[in-house]
Image (cartoon, rainbow, N blue to C red; front, side):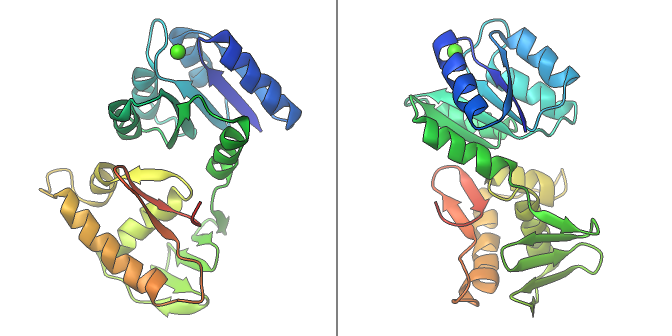
Length: 226
Ligand code: CA
């Protein structure tokens, strides 16, 4: 597992590097926005840890540019305490999760593990998470082996959540990926569909783990509760 750390505070960067190397990750560090961006584009990583406040190019700009170039490496953003606006901007720029500084190393490690744990795919067509499966060829969803009937919109939202399992997705991201570009969709509409999905995927299976989590103020995450 190879990780890129883009962080200009040397103390934090080297503490992350040391800790991750002890967990047998390979770690590259960049201390400026430009050098970090260059590495992210030229090398291949399993995860990028990205600070927001950086010299030359800030974390939000790096994230936006990487996503615009179709680089989908999971990005964990580091934000300063209380910068709620930064977190939302970061997630909308394409970051997958965020961590508020200062943080405990164990917390960082837990986030990294969650982000690099992607849903398993069988024959490239079935997305699996826990006992939930979605067959992208048959458009068939099952929980615990039982078929779940979904509308096409519910199916599309669930597929998006599954492809981003264990990561926070914002309502804007869901709207941007599930509805047409010119559709006039309000965030409330997403909440309504998430409600339908939750009834069919979670509430109908009380013996299974609830999988659709609401992340207050940000959006949703498909995964076990923290
Ligand atoms: Ca910084």
